[in-house]
Length: 233
Ligand SMILES: C[S@@+](CC[C@H](N)C(=O)[O-])C[C@H]1O[C@@H](n2cnc3c(N)ncnc32)[C@H](O)[C@@H]1O
Image 1 (cartoon, protein in one colour):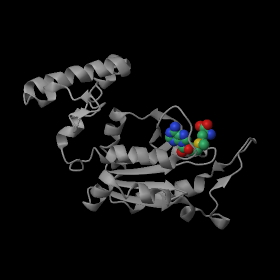
Image 2 (image 1 turned 30 degrees about the horizontal axis):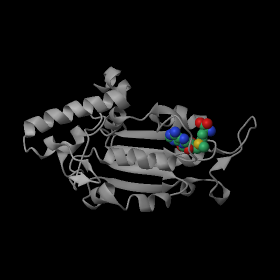
Image 3 (image 1 turned 30 degrees about the vertical axis):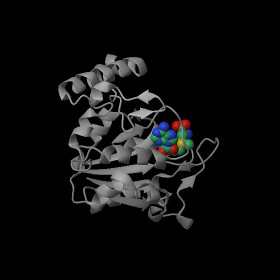
Image 4 (image 1 turned 135 degrees about the horizontal axis):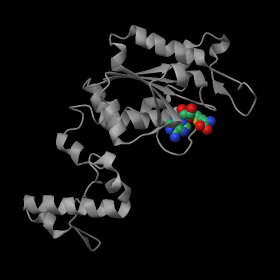
């Protein structure tokens, strides 16, 4: 997978992708990541990327030229066919991200991810340039960069070979319709709170059954909607 991120704050990504699973996947060349500065694609004086909204109103809006130019240039330079490329705009108006959307996005070979700022982007970008609008939840943050980090982190975990133990993927929360089972580690007794005996029994059949029951009970208690939602089953 190739991921290209378009932003006016490219430095924000530097430290985030230097750690953990993502940095290891980059080292192993399991995917490539390019961060592009939208200002480099502006045809305007002082590399301007924003302007006042037509009709008035507060704040600034991201102009279409830098975003159209950068997406077109990246597609032109790519060896992939358009059907293998997904252009994504992060916006609170988008489809709310979940594990099944994450998984469908992960089937593309190349992703171009646009981060908005200010009051958002010119509507023509949504109508005529992007394939998918993605929201990370029903709230507003100040820019698409942190939303892009969430999306990329979740996607990279799905690339084959990224997670050490392939099993851990299908046992995680949301991979089916259940949350993860309760996890314990050492010490056995922490301030009088003990690890359930079954986990020390060595009986893997019983442990698997116990985990499934606990995952179901936890889901019923914390996220009953997951059990009702057919899409997640
Ligand atoms: C301050 S927000 C613009 C909000 C816009 N005026 C609105 O009310 O929908 C600036 C940028 O942050 C990003 N953003 C904010 N909230 C987001 C969310 N929930 N999911 C994805 N991106 C978000 C988008 O890229 C957006 O263009």
